[in-house]
Every structure is written in C-alpha cells, then in structure tokens.
Amino acid sequence: MSSTLVAPHSGAVANPRSRVILASLIGTTIEFYDFYVYATAAVLVFPHLFFPAGNDTAALLASFAIFGAAMVARPLGAIFFGHLGDKRGRKATLVGALLTMGVATFLIGLLPTYDLVGWFAPALLVVMRLAQGFALGGEWSGAALVATENAPPGKRAVFGTFPQLGAPIGFILANGLFLIIAAVMPSEDPSRPSDAFLNWGWRIPFLFSIVMVAIGLWVRLNLVESAAFEKTVKAGKVHKLPLASVFQTHWKELILGTFYMLATYVLFYLMTTFSLSYGRAGVNAGLPGLGYDYTTFVLMMIIGVVFFGIFTMLSGPWADRWGRRRTLIWVTLGIVAFGLIWVPMLAAGPAGVMAWLILGFSLMGMTFGPMGALLPELFPANVRYTGSGIAYNVSSILGAAVAPFIAVALWSLGAGSPFWVGVYLSSMAVLTLISLLLGHETRDVDMEA
Image 1 (tube, helix red, strand yellow):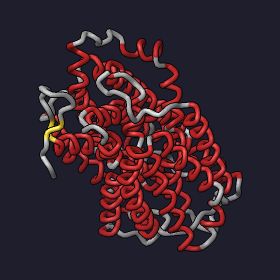
Image 2 (spheres, helix red, strand yellow):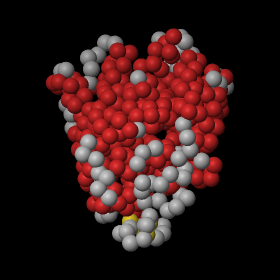
Image 3 (cartoon, helix red, strand yellow):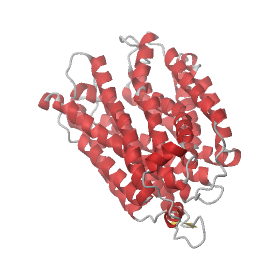
Image 4 (cartoon, helix red, strand yellow):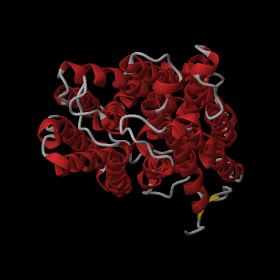
C-alpha cells in the first residue's frame, strides 16, 4: 500500500495514507467484531447461561434487551467522546474509546453465569454491555473523521468507506472464529450448542478481542492530529461546549443525519441478528423459521457478507462521482423494494434464501459505505465529532435497539412468516428516503471550514 502523505494544505504535518486507512479501519473492525460476537452469543449462549431456565422465548428477549442496552448508552458516549474530540483532538479521544471498548469486551469473556451467581450474572452483563455501548458511541465518528479529514481532494467518500469496511471484516472474523470453535466442539442437538461450547468455548472470541485492541492502539498512537482540527485550534474556533453549539446551530443537520442512517441500521440488524434467529428456528417450532443448522446458515451469511464488503468499496467511487444524496436515494428505493419481496424470496428454497442474503447485504454495503463521508460533511470542524457521533448513535436507538423486539413481534404476528418484518424495513426506508429528499448534497463542502 502506498505510503504517500495526505496533507490537506501545504505546510501541515501529514499522516501517510496507509496509516490513515489502517487507523480508521482497525477501530471499526473491532467495533463490529464486538457487535457480532455479542449478537451471536445473544442468540446461541446467553439465553442458556445468563437467565433462569424454563422459558426460551423470554430468555431470548431478555438477552436481546441487554443487547439493546448498549444502543441507549451509545448517544451518551457520543456526547462524551464528541466533546473531547472537538475540544482536545481526534487522536487521544480515539485511543480512549478503543481502550474502553476492548476492556469491556474482554471482561464479558470472564463473567460468571446465572448458575454461579444468580441475577448478579445478567446484571454484570448489562454493565459490560453499557460500557461497550458508551465506548462505541465515540468510536465510529472518530474513525470516520480520521478517514475523511485526511482524504485527498475528490476522494472523501472513497476514504470514508474504510471505516465502513470494519463491518464486513468484523463479521467474518467473529463468525469465522465461532464456526471454528463450534466445529471443534460439535453438538448433537442442532438447536443447542454443545456442553463444552457453553461451558467455556464461547468465551474465546471475547477474550481474543484484546489482541486486536493492542494492534489498534499501536496504530492510533502513531497518528498525528488532522489539519482540520489544528486549523480550528489556531483560528480560536474551538467551542467551550460543542454539544450546546451543535444543538443551537445545527439541529436540522442532526435530525437529517439521524434519519439518513435509519434504514441502514434497520437493514443491518435484520440481516445479521434477526436473520440468524429466523434461519435457525425449526420449521415446526412454536415460532417457525427456515430450519437451518447453525454452521450452514452462518456460512451462507458469510457469503452474503462478502458482497457487503464488495459493495461498500464500490459505493465510495459512486458517491464521489454522482454525489452522496443521489447515490443514497437510489439505494434507499432499492431497500424499500427489497423489504416487499421477502416472502417470495425466502419461500424459494436454498437458492432463494441465498439470493435474499446476497441482495440484502449488497444493499447494506451500498447504503452504509457513503455514510462515512456524508455524516461528517454535515457539520463544521469545530462540532464535527459531536454532531456526526450524535446523529449516528441516536439513529442506533431508533433503528437498532428496538429492531430485535419489533422483528420478533412481527414474526409472531405473521405466525412465522417474515412478511411484516419486511414491511417494517420498507417503512423505515421510506422515512430515510424522505430525509434524503429534504436534505442537500455535501460532496463539495470544505472539511476545514
């Protein structure tokens, strides 16, 4: 990879392109690795180990509730780390967010179970999940700013896709590791992991995260501060309270940014978390699904995620050429249509299910990729960390924290049919489409202003 220096204006100390790309990619890879590890454990492990036995559906919903708790903590993390990032700089803030996230994930792998400490076990899980969410609230926006504030002219959307690539890479790493562990510790019951897996195997992916955190810290400690932030400091434009400033002067951008991300979040969590539950549920279960075993369905998902990564990379050049708004309007129309064809696709056998996964994850790449540039471009440099972080993370509550509950309720309403879940996705995409039509193009904004 080229080590060409990226300097937005002459005389600025610059970060090599390779360091910019790696620094923006590594943190979000860890972020999404942590998400997928927790999401997989929330379906496979936590209902068995962290809640009383007797009601599988209640245990699954309780596990999802803790999963959603992180989404509530994320806006708080966005405010805290955004404040630091806009006042003290991007570099130190990103290091703090990454360290907090890594320690919380590692500690989940050490938690005692319900059989050992009773309700203290899920309580500890909630604390660690809240810490994860708090850290994640400052991670994405910082990584996106590292990429976009250091991007060459005309390449902001391309550079903005690198933090977004953390999602497919994190998925493959997390689920690949779970698949290896499941293969080493096979279960005779396809609906339940093996005793060895439940006893200690599930802890390995959480503990392994500390290795990636160490690599991420090493990369980020070698960054230099972005020229956009340095220019803001020299001009005396740093706000005492960035949060107050962004709400006073950029509240419209906050609302638009939140709804820009809504369809992306709903699609993301339906294709990763809901699909795993639906794909593994037995065809004759109380809440019927597709009846695939865990290994088969996750392998199918990984194939779909490859397309997620491909179209994330392709979306950057498209958004730089045609503009963020135009690109996303067409993609969002595709998401609306996709939600309305779930039933015929999923009823078409393995080929239809595979096509559903590929199409859903391809659309995910196309809608997620441009967000790395679009949300930071909505705000000036002195409130950019705070503004983009709040928009991104408030959307996580509207589109992610509630999605598992809504999806399970609609799945039940359809008596096992995913029809209403698809309609839910289409409805949220319509809200995103409206916000895009109300918004404006940001491709040519000055990132140093």
